Image 1 (cartoon, one colour):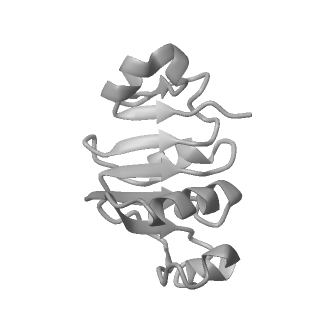
Image 2 (tube, rainbow, N blue to C red):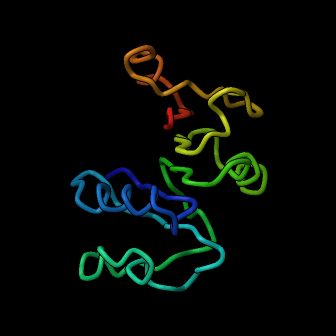
Length: 132
């Protein structure tokens, strides 16, 4: 099982990601991070998940294999600065912090457009997904 954490758990993107991951047979949710909603049920914010999960929001990352960053502009960089994410943990940024400026410490984010970077994405430890 792949252990996954989601940072920015109260937003729309996180809600859609939760819906997908809760139904994925190879994934277990390590944590859904929201410092402002820590301890509250995830389904209290994402009402469409009522009866689907009893997980609560957390204020820490846990020990995931993969962490999805569903944070607003400028917050993904701040999150990585404030949290000690091991180099072995894959980071997938669904925000926009690393699309145009892909270098962050030892991490070099690959632009996650599979039509252009399919092979690089497969091998990457850090991916910056394209947005709207």
